[in-house]
Structures are given as structure tokens and as C-alpha cells.
Image 1: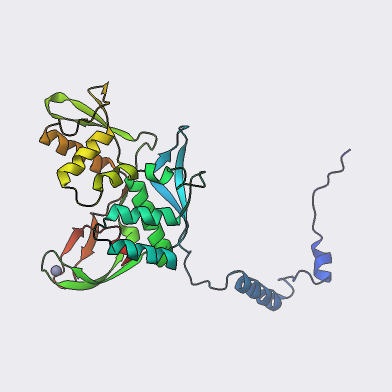
Image 2 (image 1 turned 90 degrees about the vertical axis):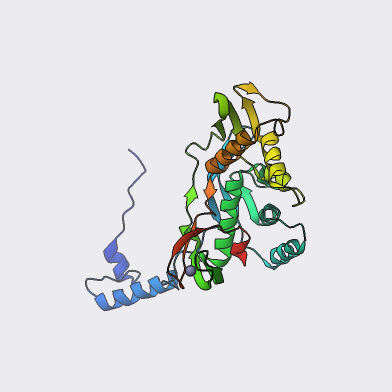
Length: 288
Ligand SMILES: [Zn+2]
């Protein structure tokens, strides 16, 4: 013998007590009530779903315990952030990674299970492509996915035209295996360089004060990201010793392998000449 009894609803008793309207006997009132309930639950039924404050990472952050964190919680940009960004843009040595860093530090609330991503240095250790994806998420959360450009310059006819770029149409590359964040690059003479993918911290060091030459930036990338050469661990800076051709191969392979939005593949059609092309859009441009 058990005390448990399945829950039963005495529908006739509820109808009698007018807690339930029987659609069979009173269809008009049932419709009215149904409509009022729908209206209360969904006051703006024509609006699409609001942009999410959770951004999935196309790569992922692996913490020191080896745990993979796959999404970031963000907030939208407020007036204080807007002022800070404008101040940064006035700086003559401004560069995009610095502005991205500033925005991320202000708008990222958590990375996976990590609630204090700035203090723990997690933001800096994230892949540059993941950081770009988060910035896109912040942009979308704040302004929506449509980016209105009044004066887009056509690279074919040279004229400018007004257009709306749908930011959610920009292709996003995902890591096949997010737990694998190193790549092997084939160099000349069958040598193999194992490289860690670029993180925010290395990117910031790479651009420095914004006055570095491109070869100086490449040297920093190689010095910081080269893990091994032909299987032998590398512990001293190698960037300046490598051949120019190998350096190029490494940088190209690292760029190709980095996950994230392909900001150099933004497809736009010119309304003046009708030609479609891929354009490079910076992560700062989309906040204009
Ligand atoms: Zn054109």
C-alpha cells in the first residue's frame, strides 16, 4: 500500500467553479480568454528574438586545468564605454587590438565558468578569433545585426554608396577540435614548426605602441608562439634567425588556422556598378 496517488484534475468541477472555460460549451468566451492570455504573455508578438548576451566561441578557452570554456557572457555598450572608446580613438598611437582589448575588458562578464575574466588574465589568453567573435556579439547586442554604412567605397568603380551590411552573414571559421590549439607548419627543407595560435596578449605585444613595422610584428609572433622545431622544444627567440620565406609561411598558416569571423571576407555589392566583392572590415569600423 502506498500513499502516492496520481494527480487527477476534476475538469467538470473546475468548470462549475468557473476556473476553467469549456471550449466545447462556450467557444466564444474560450477564444476571448485565450487571446487575453496570449496578449499578456507576448506583448510584442511581431518582434524577433532579442540578440543574445551569450556568445559561442568559435575556438574556445582552455584553462590551466585543461577545462575547455566554450561561451562568453557579455553586456551591451553603455555611455561610459562609448566615451572610453572615443578617448582611445583620439590617441595618435591607437590601433585596433587596443580598442578591442578595451571593449572586451568592459563588456565581458564571464568566460565559461570564470566570472572575473579581467583579473584572472583570461581575456588576454583567449584566441584573437574568439576575441573578435565576442566583439561582434557585443556589437550585435548593442545595435543589432544590420550595419548601416552611408559611404561604402567601391574597390571596382571608386564610387561610394550607401549599404546595409548584415553582420550575421560574415562567415565564421570554427576550430575542428577546440582542444587542439597548436598547428604544424611545413617550412622549407621539410622542417616542421609547431605554433601556438595567436592570443590577445601576443597580439597586443605584437602591435606595441602602434609604430612597429610588419617584419617586427612577425618576429614577435614567432618568438612568442613557436613551440618546437622538428619536434625539439624551442626556448630561445627564433624569429630573427628564421628565413624570410619561412616567416611568411608561418604567419600565413597561423592566420588561416585562427578561428573567428572572417573580417576580410565581408561580401558587399556596389549599387553604382553592380559588382560584388569581398571587403576587409575592421572590428572598430562596425561601431561607427
Ligand atoms: Zn562600384
